Image (cartoon, rainbow, N blue to C red):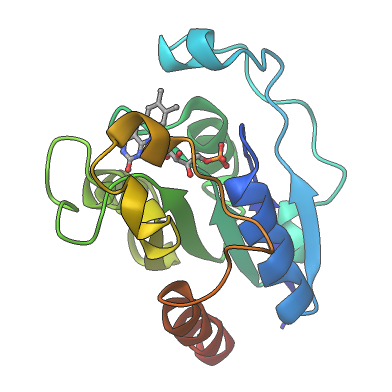
Length: 177
Ligand SMILES: Cc1cc2nc3c(=O)[nH]c(=O)nc-3n(C[C@H](O)[C@H](O)[C@H](O)COP(=O)(O)O)c2cc1C
């Protein structure tokens, strides 16, 4: 089974998560690079496509796609990836380090909305979706300060506590799929 992690990250949380997954799964990794890597313009929906990948999607049995959620949407670089390689993807697991908590997953900006978008594009090829909400690793004292809370990014220092069982369960799940 050949596996690869493809990721996009603006502030580093999903880069950290993607690199950690690739290291623990001992698999390949490649960053998805949008031609227009301007956060605000991408949020507004401006889309010039992604740069060409160095790896070949069709060479992999299992793909882990990792990236953030903005405004309750499947972000432009990830959407471009899914649409462009829809036919070549064999199995995909979608992973997001995002702001919405497990409790808020079905709200307007909740991660389930994005998971449903990925599932509706890939149908049975999307085998699993997993969220790593910021509240799994943000300091408890920031939980009432939403601006400061959203600025917390995942790294080797805060990768501990509540996030670990969620992460370990995901690794087991990926290995079983
Ligand atoms: C402009 C903006 C909009 C966001 N909208 C959402 C959202 O709708 N739902 C959500 O769960 N998280 C949302 N987030 C939080 C990001 O998904 C979260 O900070 C993510 O971990 C950032 O990943 P990165 O560090 O890899 O760029 C938003 C963040 C920004 C900056």
